[in-house]
Length: 314
Image (tube, rainbow, N blue to C red; front, side, top):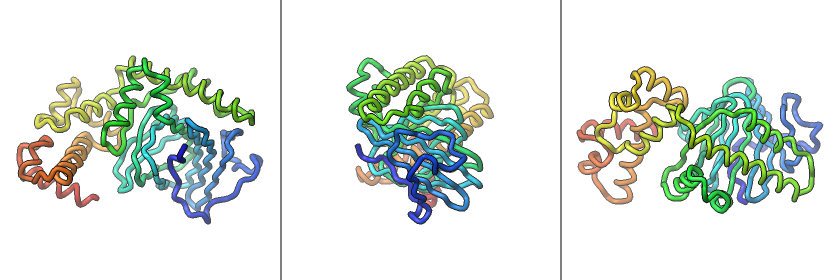
């Protein structure tokens, strides 16, 4: 399968690793079956990426030693679907113009998709470890036709025009850690055996994720995000409306959402409205005098002001 993304560090910072004995001493997880090892060493950050590209999966065990906070640039060259595990630390993912997408929490996992583009991962000082699995959607579609939540994610991936989306971020329990251990601790060199091992345990992880989504009721941030994504064109949408809808105080609503997505509720639905408005104007030739009502505004002046601020940040 296509390599889903490329780190944008200069080649001068790439240090060749020919043996596992050469892995940096801060590396916690050697991935024995990974044929590709890329070790970047910069003054402010070290990054070790151990990769296996074996259809229908692309596996990447990324370990970061940040000596000071740093933005890690990467490019995605094809629309991709990911299963993502944050084993240690926390990373903030942003667009190429530094708009927050999601802050991945320690000991959590989620599914997400990203379109072609330039992105950053922001790492605070410390050790951060992420296990990333890019999966061909056709494989999931063929294997999990009875799993409604996975089907919904696939539908959104294939049919929505969003540049990216992140699904429910849930805690990893002992079962998840055991399955992951069976993957990254696998030491056989036989390609067929590796393939069978990956298919087995990634299948368990996907099935568990579908069940967790079905059973989860407590992730307020995700529920608020999903509601806004569905209703951002409603003129009545506001912080007050959301607090009433979710039976929360304004402070709780704002804090819960900000903690998860590193942006305010207002910023989130304004971004959605502006992106939709520009799409309507560019692709359908709708003018400002008509478009503002299509994206949830009742006043043209307010819309123009919001659009001007949005465009200045581009």
